[in-house]
Image 1 (cartoon, rainbow, N blue to C red):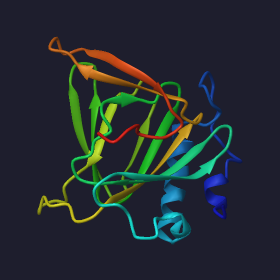
Image 2 (image 1 turned 90 degrees about the vertical axis):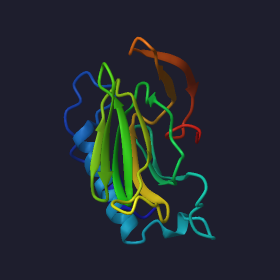
Image 3 (image 1 turned 180 degrees about the vertical axis):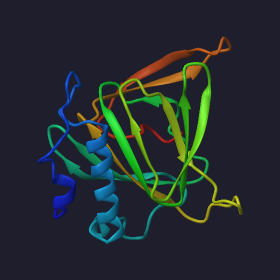
Length: 186
């Protein structure tokens, strides 16, 4: 890999009691730099030869080491990640193009936010959310895959999935061991 910017971890924030020396500001910086690298074509050799799939999500790892995983992920309409957390990993994303909807559990309900091209989001430990492609405003018709860069530290090893009960609480439905982001496409 030729992207020194994604690998530039010389000045991480102090991690304190975190499971990693990297913190959310570090991951946000890394995803921002990864997005810039992607927009400048530095990962074009990793893209599918026939173009990004239009009917299912696609992802490729653009960096991996013992404390950090960075991914380029495409998003298509009507494919959600399901409500999940990243177990013991912190996470962050930067949207390259298009828009995402994130549905985050705030302790009593799911709250939606829209993330447009250039927007970022950080996911501390315990962050439970569902992510999916957002329709393009105001047309509300998605025209192609949305792309985003995601970073996880430490690298993902497990994800837990949840459902919202009738009593408006979260119930963990399953936990899977995985080293891939955002789990199976729904």
